Image (cartoon, rainbow, N blue to C red; front, side, top):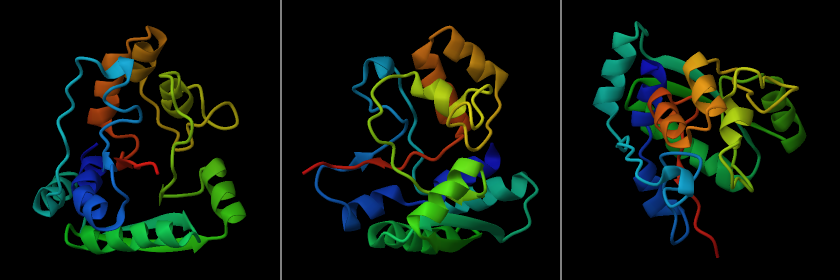
Length: 187
């Protein structure tokens, strides 16, 4: 958890939004936006950019710096740009991010197979909280679901089974099985 939190603190999401995103893009703290019914009365403390805290968390987790990670992305120019910016930001936190830009077929095949350390994708068409089960449920490793990171958390499985969406949202926010970046503005 400390390593995942360190990665979150190592990315200056607001700077990326301010400099390269389109108008109305906003920070994300969960898959579903704050106005979604599952997030009513749910307060999620933001993870603000803090490379010093990131380093501290990595060291507390016993990581020898720099932490070397391979980040896979497509060849889309905007996605490579995001990766390059994150690479520079994360270096300040003691994370050496190696970018591997792959053709879409190879990239997505690697993601689906779980052949990655880190990758970037966009959630598309997500409107219901059942995505939590498909993306993070312990029974939904490929090919049964989209839990491509093979995240296994019995406590989250119970919250999902009970359809306790607000508690599941909070739990995911604390555990960070993925790093939410932003809700991309639409035009």
